[in-house]
Image 1 (cartoon, one colour):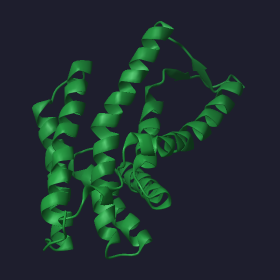
Image 2: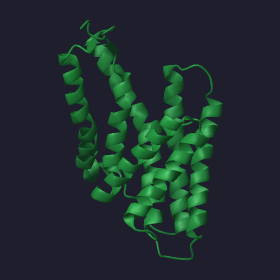
Image 3: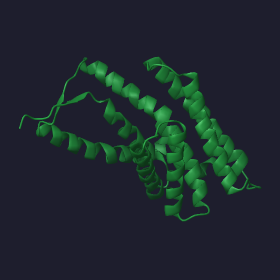
Image 4: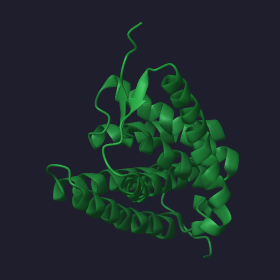
Length: 226
């Protein structure tokens, strides 16, 4: 696509940021209610179905630039960085969990069969990928950080998208307390750093997916008697 007149950077950032907030609020409003797995599946698919066209349209109509600048090459190209991002979370988490298990601070209770547990874990990976990792990385570390980086030094672009991501978390109701706001901000800094270090968003997607799986493991904390 040939370059042409573009909407000013602040407006591009505003349009896509507001669009992302509206997508998550819309999906939440349509599928409000008690949690169940079918609803989670529909929510995840609908989020990706809405967010990907949003970013495609913004890149084509507002940026007037090719898709390649967003940092999402094919999985055939990016799978190594995807695994790298997952490993950056899973290896320290595994070491920490092994230490807690060794000291008797946690115990594992499997309340279902191993094949069923593996099936649920695999489904959760897909759902986190579709509902959070892919759409959030595409919007914030893909589109927004890329656009900010055209005018700002890399570290300022990372900082800027982190502020936008934290504001997003607050507006959609996912980060309304000081500790959650801090968590969103630090998380976005790490993911933005992956984008700068690797040149695309696959490592961030991998880290995002892996980090969201940890709370789903059935581990019961059992303080030792000593």
